Amino acid sequence: MLEFDVLSWKRALKMILELSEKIASDNFNPDIIIAILRGGMIPARALSDVLNIDALGTLGLSFYKTIAETKDKPKVTQEVNVDISGKRILIVDDVADTGETLIEAVNYLRRKGAKEIKVATLHIKPWSKFVPDFVIEKTDKWIVYPWEYFEFLKDMEIKKEKLSRDEQINAEKALRMVKNLINDLKN
Image (cartoon, rainbow, N blue to C red; front, side, top):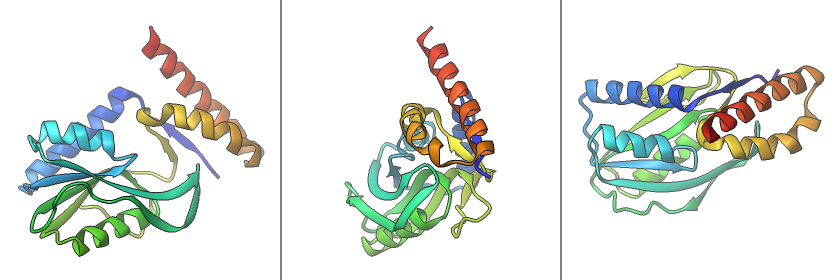
């Protein structure tokens, strides 16, 4: 059954800080942070500041159609925008769900000549085929990050008709939480 975990900005930022501490304590010093677009962009940007790593690049991969629905396989939608040849890379994404996107990202960056690659995510799902080097929390819920509140509102209006009655109740609760968090930001 589809359940939701709606993160506030405060909780998300606390998780990013905790992730930075794990990375720093591992003594891994990446030359470049690569954000997986779109979910990894904000965590990667924050980590670049906290870890004092100015080199920040992006790699666009598309795998999800909508909430809890994927395509057959991830597809590169935006080539990596920095030279990574011979560099130590930290890939950052918000979640390792199926793991397919991270597998594709690692393989892609290896083909582009990365010297060493480690991966950091805020969450991992129990069924993920890929286990990041650095992760904060394991969950089987659909996570709604603060940087995707508006996407969630839009997608859930379409998706909720396809849900079971219990999932619709969970979705309505999550929608109310997101709307309240957005209203709090306005005040």
